Structures are given as structure tokens and as C-alpha cells.
Length: 150
Image (cartoon, rainbow, N blue to C red; front, side, top):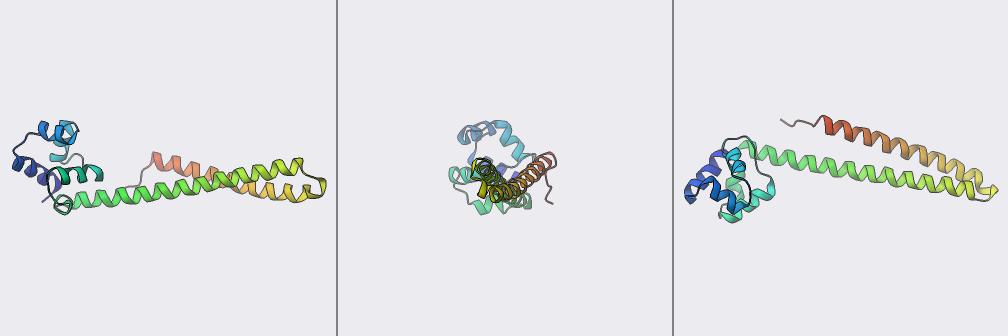
């Protein structure tokens, strides 16, 4: 059974209206209607709340249809991609700061160390700036063109 049919039959078994179910879950009646008409699907937190509120297993709610399973897989993979991009962006930012610190130390340091710091700061600064810009631009492109998972 698909999620839309499962949620509707659950509501009918409980003998409650969409409005009453919405109040119990602290969401809008339109959200319930959208679920029942296959226009939208709830997120994982809402599925857990439905499961607890109506004493129904998550397996029965989720595994009833392929659409919900695909949505959960897609949400999970998108979260992992976003987390990885944030880690890489953070690393690029720290490398940028490190290069900037070396650059300032090179300018203020003793003449004997000037060549060392100037070279290290140039390499670090340039590499981190390139990484920071590439990842930033990739993030913007990804926001404008979200990946579709079949």
C-alpha cells in the first residue's frame, strides 16, 4: 500500500478528520491533505511522530510504498553530500587563514626567514583560495540545479 493510502486508512481507522489529525501532529490540515493525495511526503521526524502518536510501526508506514523509501534514501544522501561539502569548505577556509597568517608573518618576520614565509604563504594562500572559490561556486551551482535521484 502506498503512503498516501496508508495515512488515509490510519486516519479513518482512528475515526478522526484531517483537521483533528493535523492538530494532534501540530501541522496544517493541508499537509495531511497533501500526504493523502500524493502531493508531498513527510520528513523522517514527522514519520516518527506519526508512528508514536498512532502506535503504528515505521515499517508499516514507510515500506508500504516505494515513494517513501526513495524519498528517505534521497534525503539521506543529500544530507551526506551537504555535510561533506561543508567539511571541505571549512578546510579551505582554514587553509586560507593559515596562508594569510604565514603571509603576515613573512612580512613582519626577520629577513632570513622572509623567503621561507613568503614562499609558504604564497603556496598556501593560492591553494586555499582556489579550493574555497571552486567549492563555493560548486555549492551555488548545486543550489540552482538540484540533483534528481530516480
